[in-house]
Image (cartoon, rainbow, N blue to C red; front, side):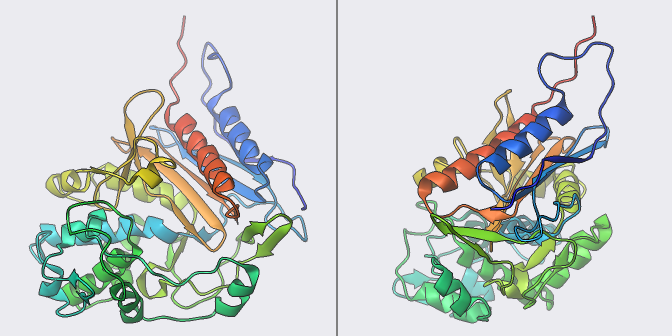
Length: 383
């Protein structure tokens, strides 16, 4: 595997009268990106923003295992499940406008779509879809071997087809009586947004969030199998010595959830959301009403709780932060923002070490450590 030297791409470091014990925030960010790369992950880019708006960026590894090209500080990557926070924000904006209610049944908007095998759309609410408490089973297509990747990477599914796959299964639990991560639930939310507005959810995201915030590096990809430039190649580890370039593929949830972004835009979105710039006070408070995640996810998110499209996680320095990571097609992204929206960080990795549970958890823990360190920075004391 080709490796690159850890490179500091940009840095703005506050000068203080007395240097704090331990590494500076910028040095810590650089060390954390190097630690992630040292796990065997081909490329890493990270960006943190302080309360005064200053940015620090670090990278490690390579954007291309063949050419050794360095990782760009402004490289695009697939947003994956972080899009759920965008979808939830649009739904809560629609609630604030009186155009839907969180207590609406799914059948109110999508009559007869959720039915069969014990599934009942008249008993599932919009709130339960947002919080993953609907009980709807997930059965999205996916690949677990290189052969499956090459066979499936250009397959295209409609939202209706993906929901139908879930309806072939009995619910995992009764609505409101458990917690289970369901991508299908967010496909249904996309469909509800279109019913409520007459526009595809990706257009509502563009009009309500991206354009007002000037997030011009966040783009809906649709059925495109490629990303804008610059971007790091994405790799998937399937087994010992089996690293496959999986950059080129059509995301399964392409109809509304296929967005690409950068660490700059993701930071700006999370800061605007928690800073109260996208939702009225009541809707932001609704978003932050959380439920404990499943025992399986507690391994990855110790102490984690899920609100409405937003995850609350504890900080090692006390308090909590808000986030929603994403992983798709070799790109793994973790992020976090403090409760006041003033300090944030994003780390994007361009290789998924998904061959063993141990490697998955190791990568998750290293990314989480970077976010925790970036958000727990304290100003140096001055004697």
